[in-house]
Length: 193
Image 1 (cartoon, helix red, strand yellow):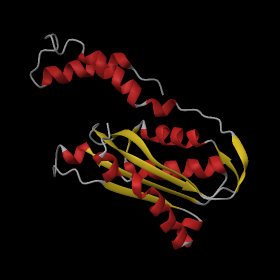
Image 2 (cartoon, rainbow, N blue to C red; image 1 turned 90 degrees about the vertical axis):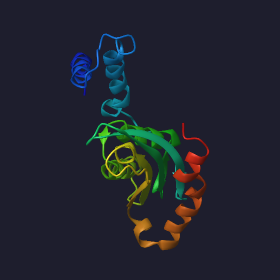
Image 3 (cartoon, helix red, strand yellow; image 1 turned 180 degrees about the horizontal axis):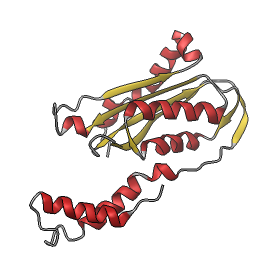
């Protein structure tokens, strides 16, 4: 999806004028261009294309934990950010671990809601790996909730649980044990940025 940066720049100028600012003043002169460039970068997930390379046969649990992501709330255009944890049981073959991170980026770098993003990541992991046994957990702080409205930055956790992870409680608990050191509360304490 191509970004029309000229329209974004025009819209930003209009917003600045609407709130009583002078878009030609020193600190704002380049703001419309910067905002257009920012949206182009933040929304690059729409143009994501990836081919998956399968590796050696495997059947043991695969978990990639603490994948940092940044997204934009589609309701307020404010950021939400956090970590994703992806687990799956291979059905013979595994994809490269970096591909899992790329899938998270594909769906987070869009106008998004966390619930849909989590489902989309799980669906893509299942499609890419050929495994119906997928578990994706996302934890995020939503600035649309922290900065406005209720003004509370409580983290939101969303889980997409499929296949064996739905049926086997001990398998699900194993994933939670593995991801514990990489949970959002620990990552923020260690400096998210």
